[in-house]
Length: 565
Image (cartoon, rainbow, N blue to C red):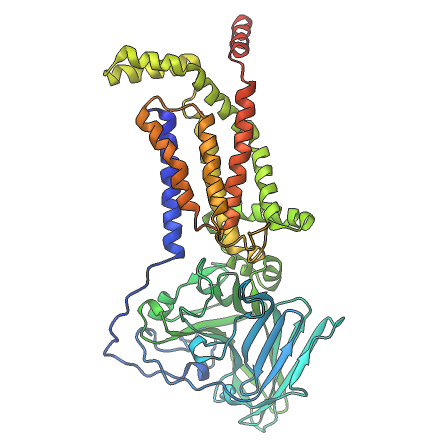
């Protein structure tokens, strides 16, 4: 078989495997529900779960170690009075019972282009979509039942106002006065929280502070279907570690370390608790339910601080940051180390990150992400122009020597061994690289995959329009115009390339545009736009190189070189 075509087949096969693997990851088959276990262990209500106090070096404050197939308890609703907070980017509800955030809507992110008035909601007190940000104190005080009060029921970040501070005050048993302070800043999704305890009793109080996220893993919770959905945790050893629902349902998190954070992710958005800096905390998790691989289970992921003591008349406090919103790299990296890694660009992150950075710079000028993709593609072609030009010259040489190769084939007939040996000697003598024309295809594949992850992970490209009928570059072309144009461009690109000497191979090559068109039908429009633009630029470059290719001039150059030697 022609070596050039063999390499091309391998490249196409590799791309096909990568596409299929990515597709299986993004659209997994539905799991089969298993029969509930006969063993049922006692479990607390997820909403009311408060971890015991923690001291560094002590044993795990959360039990049991194995939590699989726990019975789902009857969860009490979070009905009751609440406080609303509206900033320029967030609209929240804070429950007066417990002072926890029970609802968050993102004012700049509609659910879809068809439902522009319906906003993406992260925290939710609906039992079917339970998702809460909880915080409080431990050791004999159930802070989830403390009734908090504030000066107002409704707070608004006014135009020109840079920050909004809200104080919630409640009385706990044992003579404790608990104050929760939330600080919201203009344009920011990071919420700074401080919990302050004043001991108004005559006896010392010892306990810990905790923060946790409670979420029900409901398949209907997320409106998206691509990218990673699950929990994540950070430590100095592993700045970003995924914790799948399956793993969380089989065993508890039980670790202590300095700094770190906990988070729940869904495509484009996340929530995360980040402890105050340089504090040793114990990170824990709980699972409630019997779902296969954690499906339908309710999970708790959080941390508890070291034990502290408040003597009579004394005040102690602990700060934390809650991030709830889109995965914006600048804001995430400003909140905590490694939090920006939740924008998971996959194993080609070293390509994805610079590609997105360049796209962002171009977007700041042109104001359109579609044209940013086109211009980035042009820039990539310019960078690889020398290599591509060399490849196209190799293809032109192959076209020139095609009649002589056909003569070799006719001369050796069915003797494949002799033909192979003669062909390799011919390539060596003429200094022709039969695989040279495949390099542009091989170069495209990693860039293609890197851009794929940029499109499905970068929230900036979510619902980003291009032109005419393309209103969202992160989803498929609704009319399949771009995939069809991409297939046509591949067809013309093949016409410029020298055909394989084998008629069977030639027919297989002619099928490639059809195969790729089918592959690309359901791919994000931005990705197809990249491939189409790349094909058009390749056609133009290939046509120019082959048009200006002069075999006689090349032969004359070779003679001059020989004379100099």
